[in-house]
Length: 155
Image (cartoon, rainbow, N blue to C red):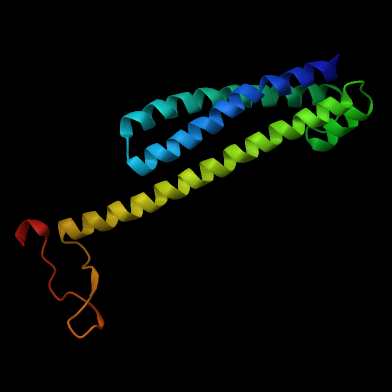
């Protein structure tokens, strides 16, 4: 009984995990295009999917804990070894784990993209506001800093 419930919870997470992966891919495109309206919509959808996936993850952990099994892969393997749907349970769990790993990788890439854009924006703001002078090459080809930087508004 618990094994079939657990299998159903795992298969129920395929659709939201796939949707999350697609959203993360769309988010990557929106980040590169700096489409803030699209990013706002994606954020709301992502949060809803993440909450749903977390709830199902908790339910799966509760099922394993109620059977006095570890709430990790080892517990799932122990349950599968005693179940008629054990092979399907492990196979579907592997598929879900792979999907979620792809989501994590896409999210990490998006996070890196955000960091790169923040650094570029900060550098541009420093140049525009006359903050720290940018390092440039002078006429002789050597690397030097400008002596007296002027904000763009005073140039």
